[in-house]
Amino acid sequence: MFLIILLIGSTLLAVPGVAGASQCYYPYVPRPLESSQQIREQLEADGLWHPNRTVGETPPPNPQVGDTWLWYIWDLSGYPTATLKPCTVRGMGPNSYIVVDDEEWNVSINQTDVDRILLYFEEQSLGQFPDLGIWELDTTHFGDPPNPLDGLPRIFLLYYRFDIASDGFFWVFDQFPDGTQPFASNEADVVYLATDSSGGGPSTDYMLGVAAHEFQHMIHYNYDTNEDTWVEEGLSELAMWLFGHPDAISGFNSNPDNSLTAWNAQWADYIKTYLWTLYAYEQYGGQPTIWDLVHTAANGMAGYLTALTGQGYTVTMEDVFGDWSVANFLDDTSVQSGQFGYEGDDLPPFVPFRTHSSYPDAGTGSAQNWATDYIRLTGFVGAPTLGFDGANDRDFRVSVMAIDPSLPTQVEWVPLDTANNGQIEFSAASGYAEVIVSVANVFPSTSASYSYTVGDAASSALPWEDGFESGDTAAWSATVP
Image (tube, rainbow, N blue to C red; front, side):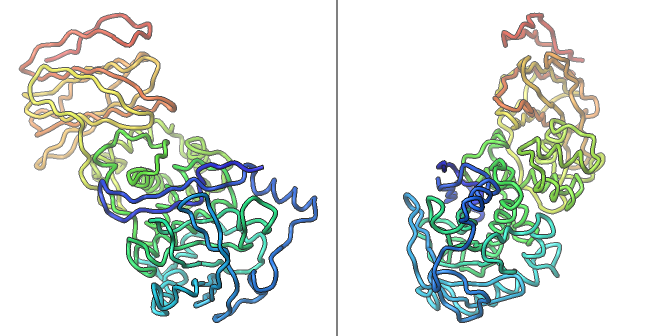
């Protein structure tokens, strides 16, 4: 059996740093319905767990530079189809073979490219770990590649000209004997990479980051074949950061009401998962936590909770998300205990969806699950006030941030009761240039509506009425000094 779904391990990346014009492509490609272990056990029981391809169509026992054999090259612009083409080993390191489609040799990739790819895959990187190559960075943080069939100590990086606007992918069916599954197999651990990426040539810093990204997918498949897409992509984005060339932050900061756990194959989806994973890495234990996340059987937020709990953290994912929402806007590790910022990247400004400059005033909003709205308050007199009423059957984390270039940033949480009603007089913000209200919907499955009032020392209170038909009909007022 097999099911056509979005293949977690077959990410095809976008042009780096192009805000609002992403060429991100996340194809519908085939993936087995069963886990790799289930497939292997069935094939072993049937006596079919062995390489099936003939000599000249499969890696030799000890490949060397200059060896050529036929590879399945994938066209993905429609239903995936494979063509057998001669490809040659053009480079070899302790952990990798660089294989190139013969038609592209000295056309879109040459020996200089291959030498640079080998250098950075095996020995060096551009970020915080300059003496470690992609192989060691990824295997140290995520685990080992599967190596189920070819028995070789190296993986293959196969370069060819794609028929789609994308950069790289990992093809799950290579993990199984050719002819035993609905799609062809090269019977080896292979990362497929474009020679003609719109992000530059095959040995550019960006494409080296893509190699790290796709290698993480290969590794992850060895431990968890059904991880949530947003977790998988976040980890592969982290692999790019570990290498030292992460994707440029754009898109998500201009529309942060974008569910972290929903995957729509847009550029902003890569960025939101990148920032979440980098934040978890920096704030909650680094490599050991990431390792546990890859190796746990739990998926999604449950996997994160398992990993954090395993490292001794007594936190809820709702509270972590609330802190992350503040960190995305502030990016300032000098505030409180450092939980409201990043060390490893500089974030562009996040955009509030509404600004208030006269008081009293009121508004309504709706945030997707695991997403955040920001509301800006300016021009207030004295201490600003906030009254908040969220949908009673949802879950929120609401905070207020006082920001002024000449004053230390202040952050406070709005206490909410069981019906998601709360109010605050933000005395610490008196005299500040602006206040940002962060409304994080941490309900796991659906969007959440809310209403609010804002005031200041010169305004009067606004009446409040619950309008969510959730059983709480009592009126209440936001207190204004």
